[in-house]
Length: 63
Image (spheres, one colour):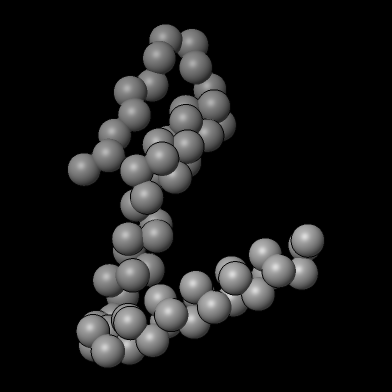
């Protein structure tokens, strides 16, 4: 469970910004999206290979 203690005199907005930063740092939302539905290992491998292929093509275009 992720928590942020509100400091004395701290506004809600700044505490909320700190909370969002902590969520990003701990990959809370990305893990939640990953676990939203079950993905077969074969599908996971296909996506991983597709991302790798896309990244290599993207890198080739920059040169």
